[in-house]
Image 1 (cartoon, rainbow, N blue to C red):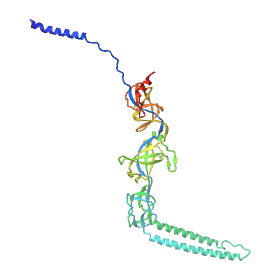
Image 2 (image 1 turned 135 degrees about the vertical axis):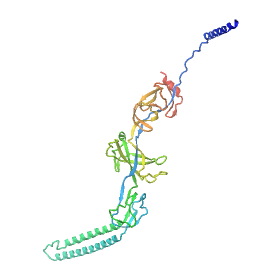
Image 3 (image 1 turned 90 degrees about the vertical axis):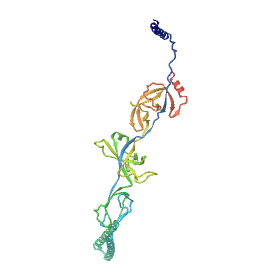
Length: 398
């Protein structure tokens, strides 16, 4: 009988003990909520500066001038310079070809003889004219005619001398032309002549392009045109903007200096882009230590310098949040400011509204923080503020 009653009694006792425990728990200690520490941020002071916009583009290196080399006289090729090969660089004045000059030497000798004969004929006519003048002076009371004084004969002899002198100059020039020389500094792209060939003034000997300078045609978006100065005429082209060209065939890309010389006449109807032309000096020679020559036809990246803007507000893109917005510190509190971006470049942006000189721009990434949050300034313009927390606390006091 006892074994049946004992388990319920034990269970009832445990329930009673549990009830007593719940009814007699100690009171919780009352305390104040811990204060949240102000957000620690770095700031920079917004200062106006000169902003030089850059327009970015890509273009292909191409010749500023192309040349076709023709002979100016006919003849058989007797000498071909070893440098007359595709890819070779030509220096102005160096001999490229030599033609058989035998008949041109004969022509020169004949022209020289004709000049001497004309000089003699002219001297004879002058002597006759002088004698005629003396004879007429002995006859008083009469006026001689120009024909009687042999003036027409003298003029005719002078004309013959001038003609023979011109023929002599031409004979000398043709003889010189049998030696074909480079009239410019260039690089050969095509050669069509060999020793022994007979050439005429209609024979294309070679093709070349100028090696002293080259051009890059750079397409510019219509919205970027206003940042460039395309109307400042100079003696060598339109615009005085400098251009930095980067050669992607080297690692890291090497920089070459160029200048903007002119622009296209109209926007491309399909792309609404304008071609601007940059000119680069000596692109096929190393311009400095470790600088590799450029290659005709290669693509280069260009940074075109625009018109400088003074007293501009420029900040790094990393300080700009979507909106676009920035954070500034005013009276010890974080304030969200809406801004207007006049121009955004890869690393920085021109701000036209929303920031004023002297503003404390937050450079710390604060994320989605409410405007009005109390902050502690850690550094200003990269310098430790010292007792920044105390200064901020004083600013928060009424």
